[in-house]
Image 1 (cartoon, each protein chain N blue to C red):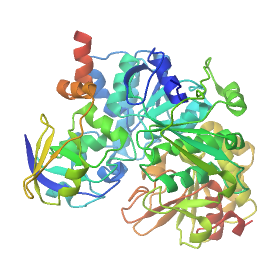
Image 2 (cartoon, helix red, strand yellow):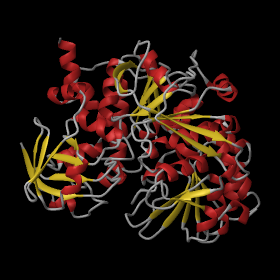
Image 3 (cartoon, chains in turn red, orange):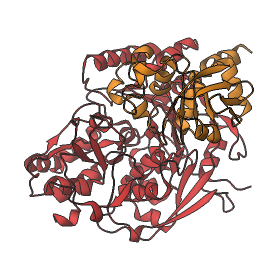
Image 4 (cartoon, one colour):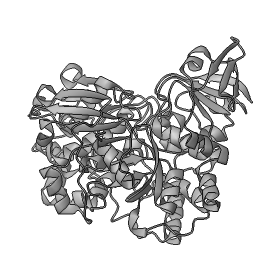
Length: 420
Length: 163
C-alpha cells in the first residue's frame, strides 16, 4: 500500500517498511527542541526517570526565546534554572541573549533541520519545519524530557489530508493569507490529529518564507504536522543552511488521503482573522477601517527577512499614523543583521516604529507590547485567543506583514493598496 | 470511582484560557492552579472544589503545547476532564503527566453546569447522577492504557528499562 510523505518519514524512523494511520510506533528522533517556558517543566521528569546526560548533545536544542531577555524576576529565575540544567545535562546547543532568535526561524536558518528529519519540540509551532519536507510536531515537556533522555518518542501515525494548491498568488497575497484562508474554511479542528500535506503546481509559486508561515500555523487547524514536498526551492534553502546529509521522501502515487482540499491561489485576497479564533477569517476589504491601537510585525509566523521586506516596502517614505504603536521584531540575530544591511531597520524607525531584539514577547502576552483593557492589535502572529496579547478584554487581529504595515500607516485596519 | 460537580465550558477552550501566558514564569503546580481557567471564568480558581469535573465541547486544550495547562487543572483538584474531543498535544500531555481525560460527545452534551457526575475509569463509564443517564467513554489504544497503568510516561520509561 502506498504511503504519504509523513508516513514514509515515520516508517523510516521506526525502522519499519510500512506504517498505516492509527498505528502506534516508537520512532527515533533527529532533533528535540525546548524553550524557556517548556524546558523548566522537563527538569523534574528527566530527573525522575533517572536521567543524567542527554542522549546525544548534537540532537537537542534549547532556545531561551519567549521571555528573554528576562522580562521580570520570575522569568530571570526560570532562565537561571534553564542554564544550570543545560550545563548539568551536557547540552551544547543553547541559544541565549545575543545568539538567541525565535526558535522556529532560528533552527532552519542555522541548519538544524533538514528534509526527511523527524523532529519533536516542546512548542506547538514546531510544525513549522514541515516546510523543509521534514516531519515535525509539537509535544509537551514530559515528552521532550523522554526524548532528550532516550532519543525516541511514541507516535500515533496520523491520517494525511491533501491540500492541492493551484494558480498564482496576487501581489499582496502571501503565505499568511493562504493558511488563514484554509483555517477559515476547515476550522480550528479541521485537521485535528491529521497531517496536512501540500501539493500541486501552486507550491512552486510559494517561496520558502511563505511555506514556513503556512506550516507554522498547521497547529491552528489542529493538525499534528504540515508538510511540503521537496523541490528546487527546498534544495536551494538546504544548500545555504543545512548542516547534515538529508533524505528526500516523495508520496507514492497510491498513497491514501482521508480528504483532498483544493485551493486556487489566484482567487485569494488579503485576509485577517478577527478575535477570538484563527478560523474567524474575513477579507480585509470587508472589515477595513477597524480601530487599532498597536501593530506587531514579527514572530515565528512572520518574522523572517522576507516578511520585513514586504513591511518595509509598504512603510517606505511614510509615517506611522498618530495613535498607533508599531513594534517590529526581527526573528533572529541573522534577520536583524540583514534588516540593518538592507536599510529596513532605518526605514521602520524613520517611519516612527520601534524595533526590538528577537523575542516571542508580545505574541503570547509575555512583554514588549502588552495590550490594555479595550485595546486592539493587528499582528502578524499566530493566535488571537482571549487575552493572548494582554488584558482579557483586549483583542488581536491576525494579518500578513503587508496588511499590518498598511494598518500602521493608515491608522486603522487597512488593505496595502489603500496606502500604496 | 471519581465523583464531582461539573463545570461546563464551550468548544475550542484553548491553553491560553486554561493558564494564561502571563503566569508561565511560574513553575510550581499549586501556584499555576491559582489561575486555572481564569480567562474563561475569572472566578473559577476560587470556586472549584477537590474532585470537581471539567466538561467541555470539541477541541479542548487547543493552542500551545504548554504542559502547564494539564498541570494547573490537576493541581486545582479537578479529578478529570470530559469533552467531545481534545486537541492532540493536550491529549498527549494529559496521558504523559497523569491527568485523566475522557472523550465522550454524548456525555459532554448531556452534562450541564452544576450536575453531579460519576466516572468509573476502569469500566469506561460516565454517569450523570443529576439526569440519571449513563455514557460510555471512547476506548483508548492498549499502549496508552499501559501509560495510565504505569502512572505516566516517565514511570512507563522506568518500568520498560527495568524489564
